[in-house]
Length: 131
Figure (cartoon, rainbow, N blue to C red):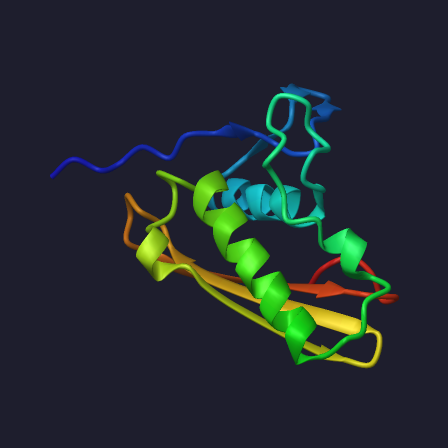
């Protein structure tokens, strides 16, 4: 039985280590793509003006259910396009919730070629970063 190869991808953000360019596994590559979609504003990339969900622009919006729904809709459209071929689009699940100054985004998906389910969570707010 043949096994699917596990290709290496250039890490994002691009950086060079002692042995040359740093690479990522397939799972890390998907997470890096999701981060790019989350934190890139539409219009920010010249040759891909529709790329990105622009969640940074939501930082001063009221943290309530209409914001969560808007964020979920933006992410669903942006991630489906950005992860085309890597993730089964029917498996893409996005939950957005907030509390105080924090916005939490939970993304679940199934890798298209492997059928492996994965989840990623991101915390947006003063605590910064993602978890």
